Length: 155
Image 1 (cartoon, rainbow, N blue to C red):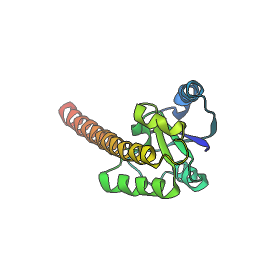
Image 2: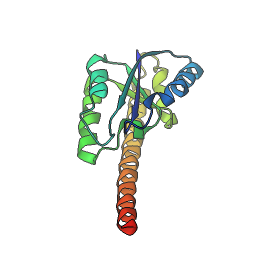
Image 3: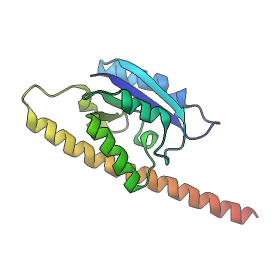
């Protein structure tokens, strides 16, 4: 299992590396080491993010995609999120998000032969990721709407 950290900022004015030490500290506390960092400045509403796609291309089954928060991975609309999640699942990659404690269990693999624990963890993890992905996309839409309202009011 290799841990691949994904750091993303939405704009050129933001620093995606600001969370690097935070992820290192989290990994240290979990007793694991981050093998690689994939850093980019791209909107989470875009599916075609070169570094995220490179991470997935280089990942092997059982690897972990580590993010600070689910919204760093996605703010995608539902259909696009499903496509990304499907690609991640097809690769056999597990998502660990620091803000999603239930996902931390992926850093400590279940004992061999404990299929029940793995299946439950996968089901709970998928549900929680879907909920947080929906919240991240809704937050993005709300901020865009409020921004547009503010521009209209300022004019």
